[in-house]
Length: 191
Image (tube, rainbow, N blue to C red):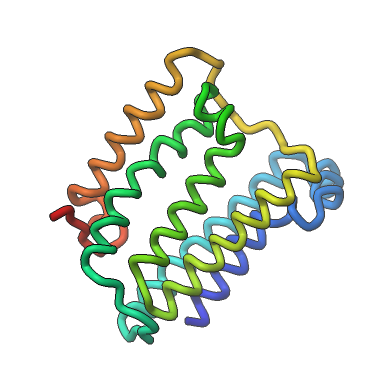
């Protein structure tokens, strides 16, 4: 569990610099230069992500179970996850989805984390998905008081929503049909 927590501190901490110290972040990036800042940031994020994945895998081997969700809830979660993937693509494809949701990536992360909390009841699940859900909520709230940095995106087009939905559904199908097992080590299925 220690490795999972350290990984979350690194991963979410790096992603939280703009939430807690946007001015410091801008000054540090300017002083170091954008490539150096992005390099260090990327290293911290990747190390954090590796520690999260490894720590979560270790914690799953001897789970401390808080609750066991019923089978129907797990099936429902699998079906509801379909909305997450188009939102991820919509973050980079300006269109109506992005305009309506304002921050589709954060919305996708919040839905993903909340649904995983419904479907999984161990201590490691609560730590992992709960902390990510709290971080996404804090980041969304902070965007009301700070100017978001421009995110890379394709040019606006009337086709972007269709592309986001199509690509999102395709990625969802990959996850349902073996991708989740390959990437995470846990099979999922729709009954």
